[in-house]
Image (cartoon, rainbow, N blue to C red; front, side, top):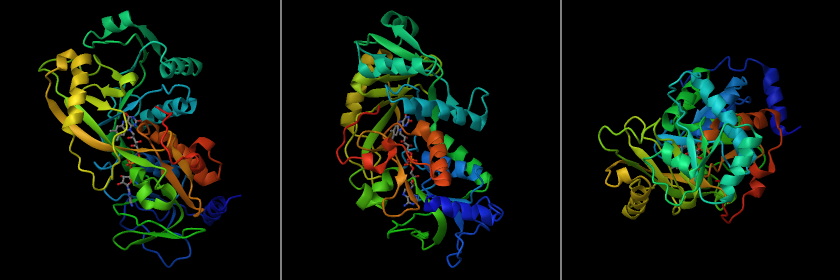
Length: 418
Ligand SMILES: Cc1cc2nc3c(=O)[nH]c(=O)nc-3n(C[C@H](O)[C@H](O)[C@H](O)COP(=O)(O)OP(=O)(O)OC[C@H]3O[C@@H](n4cnc5c(N)ncnc54)[C@H](O)[C@@H]3O)c2cc1C
């Protein structure tokens, strides 16, 4: 039995879990530095999509949880901070991510019920454009079929008749996932956080200082000087993880600058919003897009990794050269948007592991500290499944799959998960 498990069983035996909780800071037992019993069972540091779901799941399991974020819930610097994020089931032969997408969609929908239209999930469909025997798309078809995920395999003629506003160029066929779509990212993070806080999770806007030492961590301190004691600490700090743990993660998580552009369709033209336009992915050109949602514009985003980025100091202004490249693509693929104005842009960062598999593991020297991140440009959709998975490991000490372990996170980037 691991130390965490023993600690939790002692806490559970002590009873009164949650009895002293308040749905916020006021009255919650935050400053009890001198007490033997930790103030909280678990402190979750980072309230991006991973952190809010972890806190939510741990609270559902009856634990006393505090959630902290340096910049606030759904903040614009966080990787989870954009307007929309794609949720698709296709993952080539990486079946675990298809399973996690399926499970996550269930949990996302359960937050707001299945009534359409949902404020969190938009079922626009997802279209994977392919050329010839592209292996990722071909293996995706096989995985979707094996797991019974509804999908259509469309010919070039099908594509042209269904989406005449797209010039498919060299695309020869496609997969359409009619049950997938996109999540309203920033809003979704806030909804989960509010649910968690409403259920008794304490929330603090505080920057946590990098922890140090060996063995067990008893407390964290914040930049403002506050001390919080907890039994277990989960650091879900996305692209900030290498700054908090430079020795362990400095060379294992690679934050990269990523840009998103919104193009304004012509007045009265609804061909670039849902339901006329699905989410689309053009793998060969490493670019994807999301239909116009709430008038923000037709989103187009290169998926190729950009230059290294520091999430604290990154200037979030797009590069004119990137815009020119994206415009050239849009003019080819969506001719009606050739002269469309930019209605908005976002500069964000991916927090890539060496191959794109998530990081979910204990700190190698601090036994009650968990490191969770490495969303690698595809993590948002999986927030609910990551929350369930991490909560189960923290509570029951179950081992983590090798693909999520720190040991599999190399120092050289070689992306295999898309
Ligand atoms: C442009 C872009 C497009 C993407 N598209 C998709 C997509 O279509 N589909 C998809 O599934 N995924 C997508 N992703 C990936 C996905 O958004 C991320 O994998 C996911 O949001 C990562 O969440 P996180 O909780 O790990 O990190 P974050 O959202 O970055 O959250 C980390 C939090 O930790 C806080 N923090 C950091 N340091 C401290 C500290 N010292 N103390 C307290 N708090 C701290 C930060 O303020 C932040 O709020 C995209 C990412 C980007 C950037």
